[in-house]
Image (cartoon, rainbow, N blue to C red; front, side, top):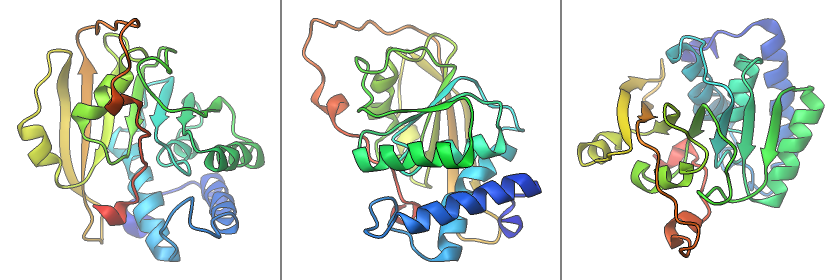
Length: 228
């Protein structure tokens, strides 16, 4: 982890190792992650998520929802680095929900829970200081999901690959402003990443009488970094 720019306290390292054992034990059909090599998992899951703690200077908005968390990326990793941050892990697949609940129980994590449903502007109405996601969807398609959970001033945090530059070149919104568009590389790898942080500046108008947008109602897929 230190090789990839992540320096962990002994207790955090012990918790990460315990998480790793659970992941390996319960990923027999690769439904939790398709990455299976030890160093690949350490680099593209653990370091990929934990390096954000330094980029955020250890200060996370709280409470925060991790949308499309999958096996807990980045939510569980952020919780290990920042125990005081309140986190909700949003993941609709039942087997992954069971895994996340087991991880929370086995690691003794506090102020963290699982929202076992698809995230849409109608399903997630609890207010959060921030929503974070590491998923396939574009920023444009993801932001409507946050319509009822991000108040004015709330932060939308995106973990993206290098193609984010193309995406943001055409991005327009009257509800959000871009606070940060930070490109970086995970140390000692060829993995280029972009951290995007947007702030809501205008409350959306959500008409609950209208049918749900089919795109918003689709399941958001967590991203294995091997996919770019």
